[in-house]
Amino acid sequence: MGADKGPLWWGFTMIIGYIVLFLYSVWAIFSPRVNDGIIGRLAYSMAAIAAFTGIFSKEENNANVALTVALIVIAVRYLTMKAYSEWRQSHEHQ
Image (cartoon, rainbow, N blue to C red; front, side):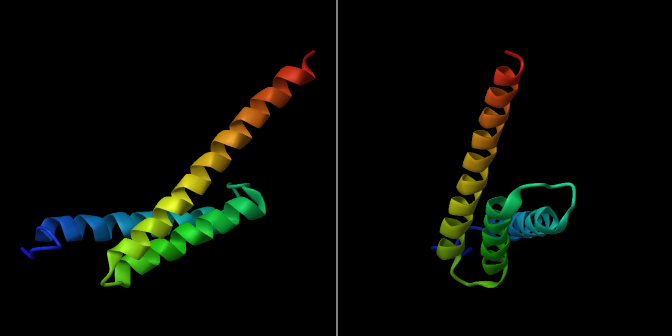
C-alpha cells in the first residue's frame, strides 16, 4: 500500500471502471442505436479519451477531471434533450 495511492484493490477497481467507461463510450460513438448528434459524439469521444488516459497514465488526476467534465456534459445534454422532447410533445397536442 502506497502512502498516496491507497490500497491495491482501489487501483484495480479504478482500472476496471476506466475500461468499462472506455468501452461504453466507444460503443456510444459508433452504435447506430445512439442518435446523439455531433455534440453527443464529441462528449462521448472526450469520455473515451479521458478513460483511455486513466487506464495507461500514472497520473490519474488529469484523467479524472477530464472524465468528470465529459460525464457532466453528457448528463446535461441528456437532461436538456429530455426536457426539450417533453416540452415539444406537450405543445404538439395543444
